[in-house]
Image (tube, rainbow, N blue to C red; front, top):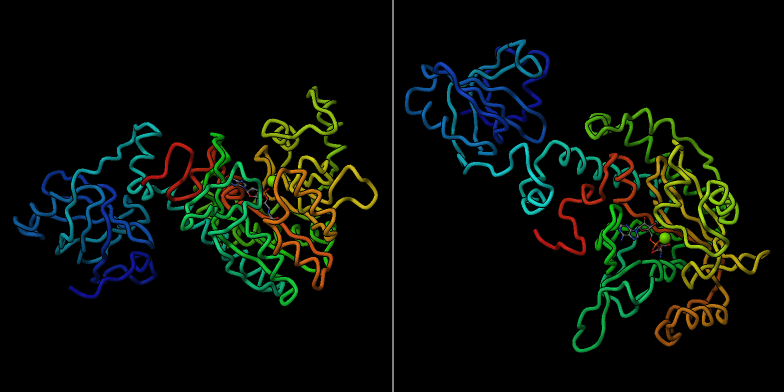
Length: 432
Ligand code: 4AD
Ligand code: MG
Protein backbone atom coordinates (compact mmCIF):
# COMPACT_ATOMS: atom_id res chain seq x y z
CA UNK A 1 0.00 0.00 0.00
CA UNK A 2 1.47 3.34 -1.10
CA UNK A 3 1.12 6.29 1.30
CA UNK A 4 -2.47 7.62 1.14
CA UNK A 5 -3.05 10.82 -0.84
CA UNK A 6 -5.88 13.34 -0.43
CA UNK A 7 -8.85 12.50 -2.68
CA UNK A 8 -8.52 15.81 -4.55
CA UNK A 9 -5.33 14.39 -6.11
CA UNK A 10 -7.48 11.86 -7.96
CA UNK A 11 -8.89 14.79 -9.92
CA UNK A 12 -5.54 16.38 -10.77
CA UNK A 13 -4.61 16.53 -14.47
CA UNK A 14 -2.64 13.45 -15.42
CA UNK A 15 -3.88 11.34 -12.50
CA UNK A 16 -5.75 8.85 -14.73
CA UNK A 17 -3.80 5.61 -14.98
CA UNK A 18 -1.92 6.20 -11.73
CA UNK A 19 -1.85 3.70 -8.89
CA UNK A 20 -2.85 5.34 -5.61
CA UNK A 21 -4.27 4.85 -2.14
CA UNK A 22 -6.96 7.03 -0.59
CA UNK A 23 -8.59 6.69 2.78
CA UNK A 24 -11.76 8.01 4.30
CA UNK A 25 -15.38 7.30 5.17
CA UNK A 26 -18.04 5.52 3.16
CA UNK A 27 -20.80 7.82 1.91
CA UNK A 28 -22.63 5.18 -0.14
CA UNK A 29 -22.27 1.46 -0.71
CA UNK A 30 -24.02 -0.94 -3.05
CA UNK A 31 -23.07 -4.10 -4.86
CA UNK A 32 -24.42 -5.80 -7.95
CA UNK A 33 -23.18 -8.70 -10.04
CA UNK A 34 -19.91 -9.17 -8.19
CA UNK A 35 -19.01 -5.45 -8.24
CA UNK A 36 -18.95 -3.32 -5.14
CA UNK A 37 -19.55 0.40 -5.59
CA UNK A 38 -18.38 2.71 -2.83
CA UNK A 39 -18.38 6.47 -2.58
CA UNK A 40 -15.52 7.46 -0.24
CA UNK A 41 -15.16 10.88 1.39
CA UNK A 42 -12.18 12.62 2.92
CA UNK A 43 -11.77 16.27 3.85
CA UNK A 44 -10.79 17.15 0.27
CA UNK A 45 -13.56 15.47 -1.73
CA UNK A 46 -15.41 12.31 -2.73
CA UNK A 47 -14.34 9.51 -5.05
CA UNK A 48 -16.19 6.58 -6.55
CA UNK A 49 -14.52 3.23 -5.90
CA UNK A 50 -15.31 0.01 -7.71
CA UNK A 51 -14.19 -3.32 -6.32
CA UNK A 52 -14.56 -6.43 -8.46
CA UNK A 53 -14.74 -9.82 -6.82
CA UNK A 54 -11.90 -11.08 -9.10
CA UNK A 55 -9.66 -8.15 -8.21
CA UNK A 56 -10.22 -8.20 -4.44
CA UNK A 57 -10.36 -11.97 -4.00
CA UNK A 58 -13.30 -13.73 -2.36
CA UNK A 59 -12.24 -12.88 1.18
CA UNK A 60 -11.39 -9.26 0.46
CA UNK A 61 -14.66 -8.76 -1.41
CA UNK A 62 -16.75 -10.21 1.44
CA UNK A 63 -14.97 -8.11 4.04
CA UNK A 64 -15.56 -4.95 1.99
CA UNK A 65 -19.25 -5.84 1.66
CA UNK A 66 -19.52 -5.38 5.42
CA UNK A 67 -18.53 -1.72 5.23
CA UNK A 68 -21.37 0.41 6.55
CA UNK A 69 -22.19 3.99 5.64
CA UNK A 70 -19.63 6.10 7.61
CA UNK A 71 -17.36 3.08 8.03
CA UNK A 72 -13.67 3.86 7.46
CA UNK A 73 -11.39 2.25 4.89
CA UNK A 74 -8.27 2.65 2.76
CA UNK A 75 -8.48 1.80 -0.91
CA UNK A 76 -5.54 1.05 -3.20
CA UNK A 77 -6.11 0.82 -6.92
CA UNK A 78 -5.74 2.37 -10.33
CA UNK A 79 -7.48 5.56 -11.30
CA UNK A 80 -9.65 5.33 -14.41
CA UNK A 81 -11.93 7.58 -16.37
CA UNK A 82 -15.67 6.89 -16.02
CA UNK A 83 -18.15 9.45 -17.30
CA UNK A 84 -20.91 7.99 -15.05
CA UNK A 85 -18.90 8.61 -11.85
CA UNK A 86 -19.14 11.95 -10.02
CA UNK A 87 -16.24 14.05 -11.29
CA UNK A 88 -15.74 11.60 -14.20
CA UNK A 89 -13.22 9.37 -12.43
CA UNK A 90 -13.20 6.21 -10.36
CA UNK A 91 -10.67 4.21 -8.43
CA UNK A 92 -10.57 0.54 -9.51
CA UNK A 93 -9.63 -1.20 -6.29
CA UNK A 94 -6.96 -3.85 -6.06
CA UNK A 95 -7.29 -3.89 -2.30
CA UNK A 96 -9.66 -2.46 0.33
CA UNK A 97 -8.38 -2.29 3.90
CA UNK A 98 -11.12 -2.05 6.47
CA UNK A 99 -10.14 0.37 9.24
CA UNK A 100 -13.55 0.25 10.93
CA UNK A 101 -16.43 -1.42 9.10
CA UNK A 102 -18.79 0.46 11.40
CA UNK A 103 -22.24 -0.31 12.74
CA UNK A 104 -25.36 0.60 10.73
CA UNK A 105 -25.42 4.41 10.57
CA UNK A 106 -28.49 5.68 12.44
CA UNK A 107 -29.08 8.75 10.29
CA UNK A 108 -31.28 8.02 7.31
CA UNK A 109 -33.13 10.40 5.01
CA UNK A 110 -36.41 10.90 6.86
CA UNK A 111 -35.90 11.90 10.48
CA UNK A 112 -37.29 14.36 12.96
CA UNK A 113 -35.35 17.47 13.94
CA UNK A 114 -35.24 16.25 17.58
CA UNK A 115 -33.73 12.91 16.58
CA UNK A 116 -31.09 14.69 14.49
CA UNK A 117 -30.23 16.95 17.44
CA UNK A 118 -29.88 13.91 19.70
CA UNK A 119 -27.55 12.46 17.06
CA UNK A 120 -25.72 15.74 16.50
CA UNK A 121 -22.30 14.10 17.05
CA UNK A 122 -23.01 12.08 13.88
CA UNK A 123 -25.25 14.58 12.05
CA UNK A 124 -22.36 17.08 11.79
CA UNK A 125 -21.03 14.89 8.94
CA UNK A 126 -23.89 15.99 6.64
CA UNK A 127 -22.91 18.01 3.56
CA UNK A 128 -24.81 21.10 4.77
CA UNK A 129 -23.18 21.10 8.19
CA UNK A 130 -19.76 20.39 6.67
CA UNK A 131 -20.24 23.42 4.40
CA UNK A 132 -21.46 25.53 7.34
CA UNK A 133 -18.44 24.89 9.56
CA UNK A 134 -16.03 25.57 6.71
CA UNK A 135 -17.90 28.80 6.11
CA UNK A 136 -17.67 29.65 9.80
CA UNK A 137 -13.91 29.05 9.87
CA UNK A 138 -13.46 31.08 6.68
CA UNK A 139 -15.55 33.91 8.09
CA UNK A 140 -13.49 34.09 11.29
CA UNK A 141 -10.30 34.06 9.22
CA UNK A 142 -11.65 36.98 7.14
CA UNK A 143 -12.48 38.96 10.30
CA UNK A 144 -9.00 38.37 11.69
CA UNK A 145 -7.35 39.42 8.48
CA UNK A 146 -9.43 42.65 8.43
CA UNK A 147 -8.48 43.38 12.05
CA UNK A 148 -4.82 42.79 11.19
CA UNK A 149 -5.05 45.28 8.33
CA UNK A 150 -6.68 47.80 10.66
CA UNK A 151 -4.07 47.23 13.38
CA UNK A 152 -6.37 45.88 16.08
CA UNK A 153 -4.84 43.79 18.86
CA UNK A 154 -6.50 40.49 19.81
CA UNK A 155 -7.30 40.24 23.53
CA UNK A 156 -8.19 37.15 25.60
CA UNK A 157 -10.66 38.37 28.25
CA UNK A 158 -11.96 36.14 31.07
CA UNK A 159 -15.10 34.04 30.72
CA UNK A 160 -15.64 33.64 34.49
CA UNK A 161 -16.53 37.04 35.89
CA UNK A 162 -17.80 38.78 38.99
CA UNK A 163 -20.26 41.11 37.18
CA UNK A 164 -23.21 40.51 34.90
CA UNK A 165 -22.53 43.29 32.41
CA UNK A 166 -25.61 42.88 30.19
CA UNK A 167 -28.22 42.49 32.94
CA UNK A 168 -28.32 40.09 35.88
CA UNK A 169 -31.50 38.25 34.89
CA UNK A 170 -29.90 36.76 31.79
CA UNK A 171 -26.59 35.77 33.36
CA UNK A 172 -25.71 32.16 34.14
CA UNK A 173 -24.63 32.11 37.73
CA UNK A 174 -21.94 29.73 38.97
CA UNK A 175 -20.73 28.92 42.45
CA UNK A 176 -17.28 30.51 42.56
CA UNK A 177 -15.88 28.95 45.75
CA UNK A 178 -18.88 30.10 47.73
CA UNK A 179 -19.20 33.50 46.06
CA UNK A 180 -21.42 34.31 43.08
CA UNK A 181 -19.70 34.21 39.71
CA UNK A 182 -21.11 34.57 36.21
CA UNK A 183 -20.40 33.22 32.76
CA UNK A 184 -19.45 36.18 30.59
CA UNK A 185 -22.22 37.86 28.58
CA UNK A 186 -19.81 40.28 26.93
CA UNK A 187 -16.10 41.07 26.99
CA UNK A 188 -16.81 44.75 26.48
CA UNK A 189 -15.87 46.08 29.91
CA UNK A 190 -12.51 44.27 29.74
CA UNK A 191 -11.88 45.51 26.22
CA UNK A 192 -12.52 49.07 27.41
CA UNK A 193 -9.88 48.54 30.11
CA UNK A 194 -7.40 47.45 27.43
CA UNK A 195 -7.82 50.66 25.41
CA UNK A 196 -5.38 53.05 27.13
CA UNK A 197 -2.35 50.91 26.30
CA UNK A 198 -3.57 49.47 22.95
CA UNK A 199 -6.23 51.86 21.51
CA UNK A 200 -7.69 49.34 19.03
CA UNK A 201 -8.66 45.89 20.33
CA UNK A 202 -10.91 42.92 19.62
CA UNK A 203 -11.86 39.61 21.18
CA UNK A 204 -13.60 36.48 19.94
CA UNK A 205 -15.04 34.62 22.92
CA UNK A 206 -18.06 32.56 23.85
CA UNK A 207 -20.80 34.64 25.50
CA UNK A 208 -23.61 33.16 27.52
CA UNK A 209 -27.23 34.27 27.90
CA UNK A 210 -29.65 32.51 30.22
CA UNK A 211 -32.58 33.62 28.05
CA UNK A 212 -35.42 31.12 28.11
CA UNK A 213 -36.54 32.53 24.76
CA UNK A 214 -36.92 29.72 22.24
CA UNK A 215 -36.53 31.68 19.06
CA UNK A 216 -34.76 30.80 15.82
CA UNK A 217 -32.09 33.41 16.61
CA UNK A 218 -31.15 32.82 20.25
CA UNK A 219 -28.55 30.45 21.63
CA UNK A 220 -27.57 30.27 25.28
CA UNK A 221 -23.90 30.09 24.20
CA UNK A 222 -22.70 31.97 21.12
CA UNK A 223 -19.45 33.23 19.61
CA UNK A 224 -19.17 36.92 20.31
CA UNK A 225 -16.87 39.07 18.23
CA UNK A 226 -16.27 42.36 19.99
CA UNK A 227 -14.32 45.44 18.98
CA UNK A 228 -13.42 48.53 21.00
CA UNK A 229 -11.82 51.63 19.44
CA UNK A 230 -10.32 54.62 21.22
CA UNK A 231 -11.04 58.16 19.92
CA UNK A 232 -14.04 57.01 17.87
CA UNK A 233 -17.61 58.38 17.99
CA UNK A 234 -20.73 56.55 16.79
CA UNK A 235 -20.50 57.73 13.18
CA UNK A 236 -16.80 56.82 12.93
CA UNK A 237 -17.57 53.41 14.42
CA UNK A 238 -20.33 52.79 11.87
CA UNK A 239 -17.88 53.64 9.06
CA UNK A 240 -15.52 51.01 10.49
CA UNK A 241 -18.34 48.44 10.68
CA UNK A 242 -19.28 49.08 7.04
CA UNK A 243 -15.72 48.57 5.87
CA UNK A 244 -15.48 45.41 7.95
CA UNK A 245 -18.75 43.91 6.74
CA UNK A 246 -18.01 44.59 3.07
CA UNK A 247 -14.51 43.13 3.46
CA UNK A 248 -15.59 39.90 5.17
CA UNK A 249 -18.64 39.30 2.96
CA UNK A 250 -16.61 39.77 -0.21
CA UNK A 251 -13.82 37.64 1.22
CA UNK A 252 -16.08 34.65 1.96
CA UNK A 253 -17.70 35.06 -1.48
CA UNK A 254 -14.20 34.82 -2.98
CA UNK A 255 -12.82 31.98 -0.86
CA UNK A 256 -15.88 29.78 -0.19
CA UNK A 257 -18.20 29.96 -3.23
CA UNK A 258 -18.96 26.20 -3.20
CA UNK A 259 -19.89 26.19 0.49
CA UNK A 260 -22.14 29.23 -0.01
CA UNK A 261 -23.85 27.60 -3.01
CA UNK A 262 -24.37 24.41 -1.04
CA UNK A 263 -26.12 26.44 1.66
CA UNK A 264 -28.35 28.25 -0.84
CA UNK A 265 -26.57 31.61 -0.83
CA UNK A 266 -25.18 32.53 -4.27
CA UNK A 267 -21.86 34.36 -3.68
CA UNK A 268 -23.00 37.15 -6.05
CA UNK A 269 -25.54 38.20 -3.43
CA UNK A 270 -22.69 38.88 -1.02
CA UNK A 271 -20.58 40.60 -3.66
CA UNK A 272 -23.55 42.91 -4.32
CA UNK A 273 -23.44 44.20 -0.73
CA UNK A 274 -21.88 47.67 -0.77
CA UNK A 275 -21.23 50.48 1.68
CA UNK A 276 -22.63 52.84 2.82
CA UNK A 277 -25.49 51.02 4.54
CA UNK A 278 -28.58 53.17 5.12
CA UNK A 279 -28.62 54.78 8.61
CA UNK A 280 -32.12 55.29 9.99
CA UNK A 281 -32.77 56.73 13.43
CA UNK A 282 -34.93 54.77 15.81
CA UNK A 283 -37.45 57.64 15.70
CA UNK A 284 -37.67 57.38 11.90
CA UNK A 285 -38.01 53.58 12.14
CA UNK A 286 -40.95 54.03 14.52
CA UNK A 287 -42.65 56.26 11.91
CA UNK A 288 -41.91 53.69 9.19
CA UNK A 289 -43.44 50.92 11.33
CA UNK A 290 -46.50 52.99 12.23
CA UNK A 291 -47.08 53.71 8.54
CA UNK A 292 -46.97 49.93 7.99
CA UNK A 293 -49.65 49.47 10.67
CA UNK A 294 -47.55 48.43 13.67
CA UNK A 295 -48.90 49.68 17.04
CA UNK A 296 -45.56 51.16 18.18
CA UNK A 297 -44.53 54.54 19.55
CA UNK A 298 -41.33 56.29 20.67
CA UNK A 299 -40.12 54.09 23.57
CA UNK A 300 -41.37 50.75 22.20
CA UNK A 301 -38.81 47.96 22.12
CA UNK A 302 -38.33 46.56 18.62
CA UNK A 303 -38.49 42.78 18.60
CA UNK A 304 -38.09 40.07 16.00
CA UNK A 305 -41.32 40.97 14.22
CA UNK A 306 -40.53 44.69 13.86
CA UNK A 307 -36.92 44.06 12.81
CA UNK A 308 -38.14 41.60 10.23
CA UNK A 309 -40.61 44.10 8.82
CA UNK A 310 -37.86 46.73 8.54
CA UNK A 311 -35.61 44.52 6.39
CA UNK A 312 -37.72 41.82 4.73
CA UNK A 313 -37.67 43.31 1.23
CA UNK A 314 -34.06 44.57 1.40
CA UNK A 315 -30.91 42.92 0.12
CA UNK A 316 -28.56 45.33 1.92
CA UNK A 317 -28.06 45.60 5.69
CA UNK A 318 -29.28 48.76 7.44
CA UNK A 319 -28.38 50.57 10.66
CA UNK A 320 -30.93 51.73 13.21
CA UNK A 321 -29.42 54.47 15.34
CA UNK A 322 -30.02 56.59 18.44
CA UNK A 323 -32.37 54.47 20.55
CA UNK A 324 -34.17 55.69 23.69
CA UNK A 325 -31.75 55.33 26.62
CA UNK A 326 -34.22 53.21 28.63
CA UNK A 327 -34.12 50.45 26.00
CA UNK A 328 -30.36 50.13 26.06
CA UNK A 329 -27.48 49.20 28.38
CA UNK A 330 -26.11 51.49 31.10
CA UNK A 331 -22.74 52.15 29.42
CA UNK A 332 -24.06 53.91 26.31
CA UNK A 333 -23.29 57.60 25.72
CA UNK A 334 -26.17 60.12 25.89
CA UNK A 335 -26.71 61.82 22.53
CA UNK A 336 -25.25 65.34 22.80
CA UNK A 337 -28.29 66.94 21.12
CA UNK A 338 -31.12 64.73 22.39
CA UNK A 339 -31.24 63.80 26.09
CA UNK A 340 -33.78 61.04 25.39
CA UNK A 341 -31.48 58.94 23.22
CA UNK A 342 -28.10 57.21 23.33
CA UNK A 343 -25.36 57.05 20.70
CA UNK A 344 -26.13 53.45 19.81
CA UNK A 345 -26.83 51.50 16.64
CA UNK A 346 -27.96 48.01 15.70
CA UNK A 347 -27.05 46.55 12.33
CA UNK A 348 -29.98 44.65 10.86
CA UNK A 349 -29.25 41.96 8.28
CA UNK A 350 -31.02 41.85 4.90
CA UNK A 351 -34.08 39.70 4.15
CA UNK A 352 -35.59 39.90 7.63
CA UNK A 353 -32.67 38.25 9.47
CA UNK A 354 -32.68 40.99 12.11
CA UNK A 355 -30.00 42.23 14.54
CA UNK A 356 -26.48 41.11 13.62
CA UNK A 357 -24.57 43.43 15.92
CA UNK A 358 -25.03 46.09 18.57
CA UNK A 359 -22.77 49.15 18.70
CA UNK A 360 -22.39 52.30 20.76
CA UNK A 361 -20.21 55.15 21.84
CA UNK A 362 -19.49 54.68 25.56
CA UNK A 363 -20.47 57.01 28.39
CA UNK A 364 -17.39 58.71 29.83
CA UNK A 365 -19.07 60.72 32.62
CA UNK A 366 -18.70 58.84 35.95
CA UNK A 367 -21.69 60.45 37.66
CA UNK A 368 -23.96 59.63 34.74
CA UNK A 369 -22.65 56.06 34.62
CA UNK A 370 -23.35 55.60 38.33
CA UNK A 371 -26.87 56.97 37.91
CA UNK A 372 -27.54 54.62 34.98
CA UNK A 373 -26.19 51.61 36.92
CA UNK A 374 -28.59 52.46 39.76
CA UNK A 375 -31.44 52.98 37.30
CA UNK A 376 -31.05 49.42 36.00
CA UNK A 377 -31.20 48.13 39.58
CA UNK A 378 -27.51 47.35 40.06
CA UNK A 379 -25.00 48.59 42.62
CA UNK A 380 -22.22 50.90 41.34
CA UNK A 381 -19.90 49.19 43.88
CA UNK A 382 -19.99 46.06 41.75
CA UNK A 383 -18.63 48.11 38.86
CA UNK A 384 -15.98 49.92 40.90
CA UNK A 385 -13.09 48.84 38.67
CA UNK A 386 -15.01 49.81 35.53
CA UNK A 387 -15.86 53.25 36.91
CA UNK A 388 -12.20 53.66 37.86
CA UNK A 389 -11.32 53.57 34.13
CA UNK A 390 -13.03 56.99 33.88
CA UNK A 391 -10.52 58.43 36.36
CA UNK A 392 -7.26 57.59 34.60
CA UNK A 393 -6.96 58.78 31.02
CA UNK A 394 -10.68 58.89 30.28
CA UNK A 395 -11.10 59.25 26.49
CA UNK A 396 -13.97 59.09 23.98
CA UNK A 397 -14.37 55.56 22.65
CA UNK A 398 -16.85 53.25 20.98
CA UNK A 399 -17.32 49.58 20.23
CA UNK A 400 -19.63 46.81 19.16
CA UNK A 401 -20.42 43.13 19.59
CA UNK A 402 -21.37 40.89 16.68
CA UNK A 403 -23.07 37.52 17.04
CA UNK A 404 -21.05 35.26 14.73
CA UNK A 405 -23.92 32.76 14.48
CA UNK A 406 -26.39 35.57 13.70
CA UNK A 407 -24.27 36.57 10.73
CA UNK A 408 -23.89 32.95 9.62
CA UNK A 409 -27.62 32.45 9.79
CA UNK A 410 -27.92 35.12 7.10
CA UNK A 411 -24.84 33.97 5.14
CA UNK A 412 -25.90 30.32 5.09
CA UNK A 413 -29.63 31.12 4.75
CA UNK A 414 -30.59 28.98 7.75
CA UNK A 415 -34.03 29.07 9.29
CA UNK A 416 -32.68 28.29 12.77
CA UNK A 417 -29.50 29.61 14.39
CA UNK A 418 -28.67 26.15 15.81
CA UNK A 419 -27.52 25.12 12.33
CA UNK A 420 -24.65 27.59 12.50
CA UNK A 421 -22.92 25.92 15.44
CA UNK A 422 -21.76 22.30 15.77
CA UNK A 423 -23.18 21.55 19.21
CA UNK A 424 -25.96 24.10 19.83
CA UNK A 425 -26.81 25.20 23.34
CA UNK A 426 -30.47 26.17 23.79
CA UNK A 427 -32.76 26.27 26.84
CA UNK A 428 -33.79 22.65 26.26
CA UNK A 429 -30.39 21.19 25.29
CA UNK A 430 -26.78 21.14 26.44
CA UNK A 431 -25.85 17.73 25.13
CA UNK A 432 -24.30 16.22 23.00
O1 4AD B 1 -26.61 43.41 21.75
P1 4AD B 1 -25.76 42.67 22.74
O2 4AD B 1 -26.38 42.14 23.95
O3 4AD B 1 -24.56 43.67 23.08
C1 4AD B 1 -23.54 43.42 23.95
O4 4AD B 1 -23.38 42.42 24.60
C2 4AD B 1 -22.49 44.51 23.92
N1 4AD B 1 -21.84 44.56 25.24
C3 4AD B 1 -21.50 44.19 22.82
C4 4AD B 1 -20.41 45.23 22.71
O5 4AD B 1 -20.71 46.38 22.43
N2 4AD B 1 -19.17 44.84 22.89
O6 4AD B 1 -25.05 41.47 21.96
C5 4AD B 1 -24.27 41.73 20.82
C6 4AD B 1 -24.66 40.79 19.69
C7 4AD B 1 -26.10 40.94 19.22
O7 4AD B 1 -26.23 41.98 18.27
C8 4AD B 1 -26.36 39.58 18.60
O8 4AD B 1 -25.84 39.54 17.28
C9 4AD B 1 -25.53 38.66 19.46
O9 4AD B 1 -24.57 39.44 20.12
N3 4AD B 1 -26.37 37.98 20.45
C10 4AD B 1 -26.75 36.69 20.36
N4 4AD B 1 -26.52 35.75 19.44
C11 4AD B 1 -27.07 34.52 19.63
N5 4AD B 1 -27.82 34.19 20.71
C12 4AD B 1 -28.07 35.11 21.67
N6 4AD B 1 -28.80 34.77 22.74
C13 4AD B 1 -27.53 36.42 21.52
N7 4AD B 1 -27.57 37.55 22.27
C14 4AD B 1 -26.86 38.47 21.60
MG1 MG C 1 -28.44 44.16 21.17
